[in-house]
Length: 281
Image 1 (cartoon, one colour):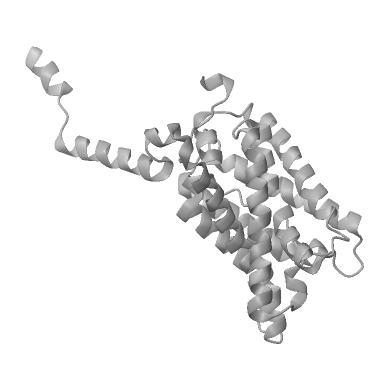
Image 2 (tube, one colour; image 1 turned 30 degrees about the horizontal axis):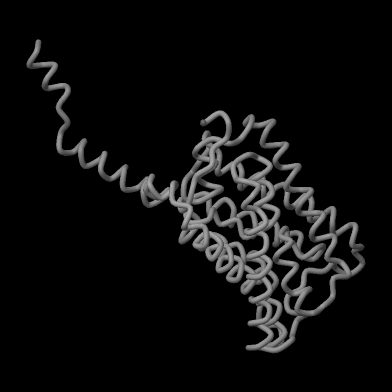
């Protein structure tokens, strides 16, 4: 009997290899546990948000600029698909650093959900706005002041209020997708990028003629600042932020309060201190 118990307690080489690979996978996706306790990495998170938002707006606004420069060579389908694919890439290659918010509405939603510290929101929002502005200035410098620098505006015959309501409902879906794929019960790891990127493409395909399908105050801020025209910008702030907060309410109804470890890791990334909700202290 003793021999049998000893045999059962021993691990086989295959089991050890599986355990090693699992541990390595967790390090790659969420980082080493020591990284959570190092506050000196906050600048890396901010740089990640700056770079990610720059790349997102580069392709989001760039579609309109290149289309104007090349006399209509880019279709609307291609123009709305590019940002979704870019978001997929950004989440996959540096989502574990900062959480890949790329959007002030997403940062506010994560904070309201209890997955992200409120004190970090201002820094994230500032670098997101800066990254968006730099992308538009880059397009202006390289290709010229064309295509309204990709500004998101209400479509023909659409009022700013109608555009705001469209942005609101689109953002409810976007933030619901983000919070859902970051939840402990439904966390799908790096493949959450597919859900988020796919939603952005889908939203753009059917709604871009109405409001531009921005769903992102930073995405709309960059072109408006470069053009010095904020006439309709309020719709692209009120709509996404209100939609994000509604999505947080829906997440509470569907999954209860946030603040769990997996949700916090998805929202905050792996670099710097991980702040958990009261349930995880």
